[in-house]
Image 1 (cartoon, rainbow, N blue to C red):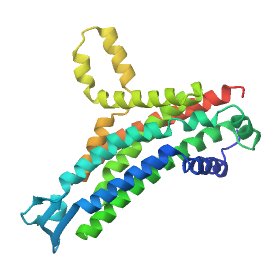
Image 2: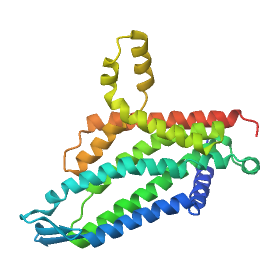
Image 3: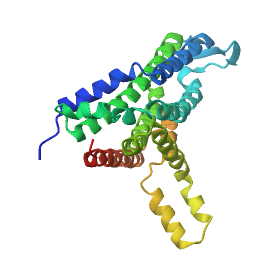
Image 4: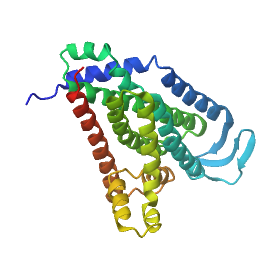
Length: 283
């Protein structure tokens, strides 16, 4: 068996990144993040004395007068930011990247790519990693921007905003595995986005699996629900981990690692399925 070439996979990923820079959706995403950072910079006014918050104003209104540590005061804001980054960021990421895999396999383009010294599985893995890199860059841009704003306003260095972003990245990596498999199967951006949204909804709903199972006493139906929901990553649990860490709560690695590992395995299954589909097609 010929081993995969990291160089070739990296080259495909770079091409995906290069093409994404001209995408209107990606430009809209970065513009939205930039406008949010600008609004945060202009609206947030913190009066910090020796690491304690003496007063603050948000959008021109007083938000606090008691002298408290600035990191304690900002914990609710970090928690809200983690939830927004997770849920809204995932939705925007699903829509922005839905057409990448189908566009890769457009007639004429896929034949050209396969005429190069690129194996099909390398093409699939490189495309997946390129999309994940796009997500990582947008995440770093958002989190880095927030961190710079906080440093400028409060002289505060914190990794709290990164907690929700990291969990959002894990969740997106899992969701895009499904999107890629559907995208290469049907070569449809709409179906790829639909698969991503369905996985998103099911990933949030799976946290209430026990409640759903209580609605029926039909054993075959309960078995089907348990089997179908078992591999789906628990997105709500991932979001809660990020929000809790952003609010200063201790992270229990023994609880988080299985969730992250399950999401990674789910993503790997999607990528392997996409590779098998591309390998079986006669382009």
